[in-house]
Amino acid sequence: MPDRAHGRKIAFAAFVRKALDDARTTRAWTGTEVSRRTGVSRQTINRWVRGEWASDPEAARVVAFCEGLGLDPGVAFGVLGWDRGTPSRPAPSAPPMDPDVEALLRRLVDPNVSDAEKFHIRETIRYLAYRPTLPVDVRKGRRQAG
Image (cartoon, rainbow, N blue to C red; front, top):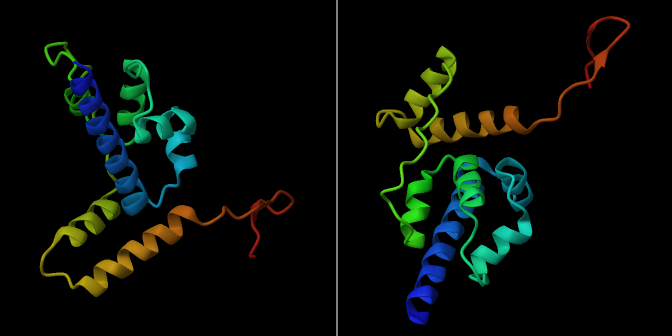
Protein backbone atom coordinates (compact mmCIF):
# COMPACT_ATOMS: atom_id res chain seq x y z
CA MET A 1 0.00 0.00 0.00
CA PRO A 2 2.82 2.47 0.69
CA ASP A 3 4.04 1.99 -2.92
CA ARG A 4 0.59 2.90 -4.23
CA ALA A 5 0.49 6.05 -2.09
CA HIS A 6 3.97 7.01 -3.32
CA GLY A 7 2.88 6.44 -6.92
CA ARG A 8 -0.16 8.68 -6.41
CA LYS A 9 2.08 11.42 -5.01
CA ILE A 10 4.40 11.20 -8.00
CA ALA A 11 1.47 11.22 -10.45
CA PHE A 12 -0.22 14.18 -8.74
CA ALA A 13 3.10 16.06 -8.57
CA ALA A 14 3.51 15.55 -12.34
CA PHE A 15 -0.07 16.75 -12.92
CA VAL A 16 0.50 19.92 -10.86
CA ARG A 17 3.90 20.56 -12.46
CA LYS A 18 2.40 20.30 -15.96
CA ALA A 19 -0.46 22.63 -15.00
CA LEU A 20 2.06 25.17 -13.69
CA ASP A 21 4.25 24.85 -16.79
CA ASP A 22 1.21 25.36 -19.03
CA ALA A 23 0.15 28.44 -17.03
CA ARG A 24 3.65 29.90 -17.37
CA THR A 25 3.90 29.11 -21.07
CA THR A 26 0.44 30.02 -22.32
CA ARG A 27 -0.53 32.76 -19.87
CA ALA A 28 2.83 34.03 -18.63
CA TRP A 29 1.65 33.50 -15.03
CA THR A 30 4.14 33.32 -12.19
CA GLY A 31 3.70 31.01 -9.21
CA THR A 32 2.34 33.98 -7.27
CA GLU A 33 -0.23 34.67 -10.00
CA VAL A 34 -1.31 31.02 -10.05
CA SER A 35 -1.73 31.14 -6.29
CA ARG A 36 -3.75 34.36 -6.49
CA ARG A 37 -6.03 33.09 -9.25
CA THR A 38 -6.64 29.68 -7.71
CA GLY A 39 -6.82 30.64 -4.05
CA VAL A 40 -4.33 27.88 -3.17
CA SER A 41 -1.24 29.06 -1.30
CA ARG A 42 2.18 28.84 -2.93
CA GLN A 43 3.35 26.68 -0.03
CA THR A 44 0.58 24.15 -0.69
CA ILE A 45 1.28 24.12 -4.43
CA ASN A 46 5.00 23.65 -3.76
CA ARG A 47 4.27 20.72 -1.40
CA TRP A 48 2.12 19.14 -4.12
CA VAL A 49 4.90 19.58 -6.70
CA ARG A 50 7.41 17.94 -4.34
CA GLY A 51 4.96 15.20 -3.31
CA GLU A 52 5.45 16.14 0.32
CA TRP A 53 2.06 15.57 1.89
CA ALA A 54 1.19 13.18 4.68
CA SER A 55 -2.53 13.00 3.90
CA ASP A 56 -4.43 13.53 0.67
CA PRO A 57 -4.88 17.11 -0.52
CA GLU A 58 -8.22 18.66 0.39
CA ALA A 59 -10.72 18.13 -2.41
CA ALA A 60 -11.85 21.76 -2.25
CA ARG A 61 -8.28 22.96 -2.81
CA VAL A 62 -7.76 20.57 -5.70
CA VAL A 63 -10.99 21.81 -7.28
CA ALA A 64 -10.01 25.47 -6.73
CA PHE A 65 -6.58 24.85 -8.26
CA CYS A 66 -8.05 23.13 -11.31
CA GLU A 67 -10.85 25.62 -11.86
CA GLY A 68 -8.47 28.57 -11.48
CA LEU A 69 -6.37 27.11 -14.29
CA GLY A 70 -9.30 26.01 -16.43
CA LEU A 71 -8.69 22.30 -15.84
CA ASP A 72 -11.18 19.53 -15.19
CA PRO A 73 -10.99 18.58 -11.49
CA GLY A 74 -12.04 15.06 -12.49
CA VAL A 75 -8.63 14.56 -14.09
CA ALA A 76 -6.88 15.48 -10.83
CA PHE A 77 -9.26 13.23 -8.90
CA GLY A 78 -8.40 10.38 -11.28
CA VAL A 79 -4.68 10.97 -10.80
CA LEU A 80 -5.23 10.87 -7.04
CA GLY A 81 -7.25 7.65 -7.38
CA TRP A 82 -10.37 9.17 -5.91
CA ASP A 83 -13.85 7.87 -6.69
CA ARG A 84 -14.81 8.97 -10.17
CA GLY A 85 -18.43 8.04 -9.53
CA THR A 86 -18.89 11.14 -7.42
CA PRO A 87 -20.93 13.62 -9.42
CA SER A 88 -18.86 16.66 -10.31
CA ARG A 89 -20.11 20.18 -10.56
CA PRO A 90 -21.16 21.16 -14.07
CA ALA A 91 -18.65 23.29 -15.91
CA PRO A 92 -19.66 26.95 -15.99
CA SER A 93 -20.70 28.20 -19.37
CA ALA A 94 -18.24 30.49 -21.07
CA PRO A 95 -19.09 34.19 -21.13
CA PRO A 96 -20.00 35.62 -24.52
CA MET A 97 -16.91 36.31 -26.59
CA ASP A 98 -16.16 39.65 -28.20
CA PRO A 99 -16.29 39.18 -32.00
CA ASP A 100 -12.84 40.75 -32.47
CA VAL A 101 -11.29 38.38 -29.92
CA GLU A 102 -13.05 35.48 -31.60
CA ALA A 103 -11.58 36.54 -34.97
CA LEU A 104 -8.08 36.65 -33.45
CA LEU A 105 -8.53 33.18 -31.96
CA ARG A 106 -9.62 31.85 -35.36
CA ARG A 107 -6.48 33.33 -36.95
CA LEU A 108 -4.29 31.74 -34.28
CA VAL A 109 -5.56 28.24 -35.14
CA ASP A 110 -5.79 28.78 -38.92
CA PRO A 111 -3.08 26.69 -40.64
CA ASN A 112 -3.01 29.22 -43.53
CA VAL A 113 -1.82 32.04 -41.23
CA SER A 114 1.97 32.31 -41.01
CA ASP A 115 3.83 31.62 -37.79
CA ALA A 116 5.23 35.15 -37.92
CA GLU A 117 1.74 36.67 -37.94
CA LYS A 118 0.63 34.37 -35.12
CA PHE A 119 3.69 35.46 -33.14
CA HIS A 120 2.79 39.14 -33.61
CA ILE A 121 -0.83 38.53 -32.60
CA ARG A 122 0.30 36.77 -29.39
CA GLU A 123 2.86 39.45 -28.53
CA THR A 124 0.29 42.22 -29.04
CA ILE A 125 -2.22 40.42 -26.84
CA ARG A 126 0.42 39.89 -24.13
CA TYR A 127 1.37 43.56 -24.26
CA LEU A 128 -2.24 44.68 -23.92
CA ALA A 129 -3.07 42.14 -21.21
CA TYR A 130 -0.18 42.97 -18.92
CA ARG A 131 0.50 46.67 -19.50
CA PRO A 132 -0.14 48.97 -16.55
CA THR A 133 -3.35 50.93 -16.65
CA LEU A 134 -3.02 54.59 -17.46
CA PRO A 135 -3.96 57.04 -14.67
CA VAL A 136 -7.15 59.03 -15.16
CA ASP A 137 -6.81 62.79 -14.89
CA VAL A 138 -9.75 63.53 -12.62
CA ARG A 139 -9.90 67.24 -13.54
CA LYS A 140 -10.23 66.59 -17.26
CA GLY A 141 -11.98 63.24 -17.07
CA ARG A 142 -9.63 61.62 -19.54
CA ARG A 143 -6.50 59.54 -19.50
CA GLN A 144 -3.10 61.15 -19.35
CA ALA A 145 -0.49 60.25 -21.90
CA GLY A 146 2.51 58.72 -20.27
